[in-house]
Amino acid sequence: MIRFFDTIFSFLGLIILSPFFIIIALLIACTSRGNIFYTQSRVGKQNKDFTLFKFRTMSIGADKKGLLTVGMKDARITKVGGFLRKYKLDELPQLFNVLKGDMSLVGPRPEVRKYVDLYSDEQKRVLEVRPGITDYASIEYFDENRILAQSDNPEKQYIEEIMPRKLQLNLRYIENCSVKEYFRILFLTIKSVFIC
Image (cartoon, rainbow, N blue to C red; front, side):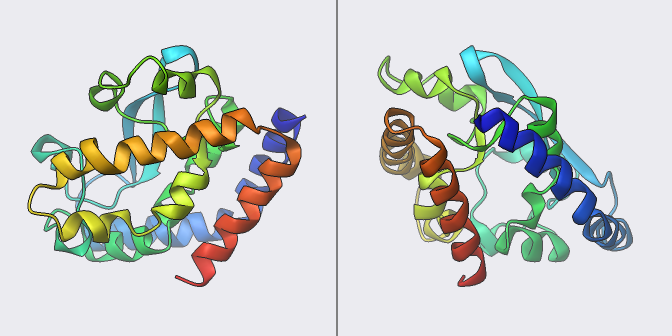
């Protein structure tokens, strides 16, 4: 049933939001050099890699200087990119991932292989389901970039504090996965975007 909602909502979302896709693409193209979209290999269901789509918010080659971003303190983020990240608009192209079946609208956020390799056996249970655009962890850590920007060692804090807590929240969703929870998380996500 959830896959049915994913397909319908992602298809309708791509149609309804297409004008915004065009505007965002033009803003990116006019203000920084490089591709409109950013692609990155992430780990999905059954521990299989897939290509995740985003609007590009950083300068070209920025990911070679580190995988974590630390908000507006991060000099790699473009001016338009900062705005897109603040309102999570850079995530919109992931609707293509949802339509394709790599992702769900709701589910554990997909990580890069570097961090998945640090998961315990219990934490690897998050790989039993499709990763999602949003989840309880995304809502609780809506301002994750700001938190990391205040850290003396962002990667250490992410690995030792933030990532375990996010995985704990992800497991909570998996254990209570239902259509009701699906819509609850979608509602809470929309609410968090508009009150940020």
